[in-house]
Amino acid sequence: MRTSHGAPARKGATATVGLAILAVAVTACGQSSIPGTTSTGMPATTSSPTATGSVVAVSETEYKIELPRTSFPAGRYTFVVTNQGKEPHALRVEGQGVKTETPTIEPGGSAVLAVTLQPGEYVLDCPVDDHAKLGMQQDITVS
Image 1 (cartoon, helix red, strand yellow):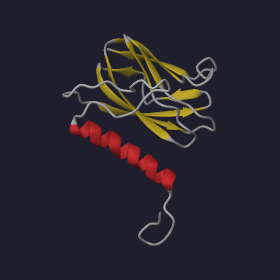
Image 2 (cartoon, rainbow, N blue to C red):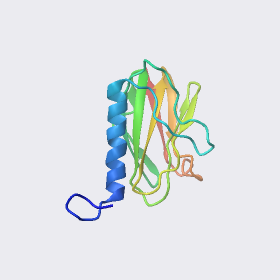
Image 3 (cartoon, rainbow, N blue to C red):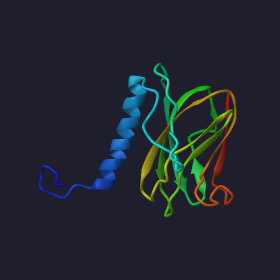
Image 4 (cartoon, rainbow, N blue to C red):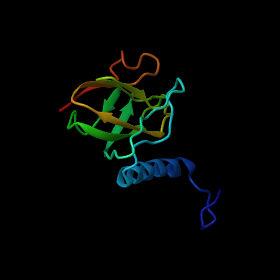
């Protein structure tokens, strides 16, 4: 594939930008889910025709998950997860009856995960190998 100037297109950058645009477009349009599956083949999102949400940027590296904050009001969220590490990672959200995760994200890649969070405590972690045991987890509180 080539750009309009005849130079080779950068597939990785295009895919990352495309995921970010998709996440913003889905949130802006009020659509509640983004297609995707977990590593077990189960849907990575749940669906509700009237849900809207906020986009939250998540950065993953060896062995850390970074979020802009750890307290959230209850509601619908779209986590845009970027793997800035050198190993494959994923993001799992678990708590209050929610258990969902992204597919495995290769280094330099991104994924999105839409979820409705009710009040309570949640754990965000990486389900790949024993990354969570190595410290790749983050507790969040939803009020």
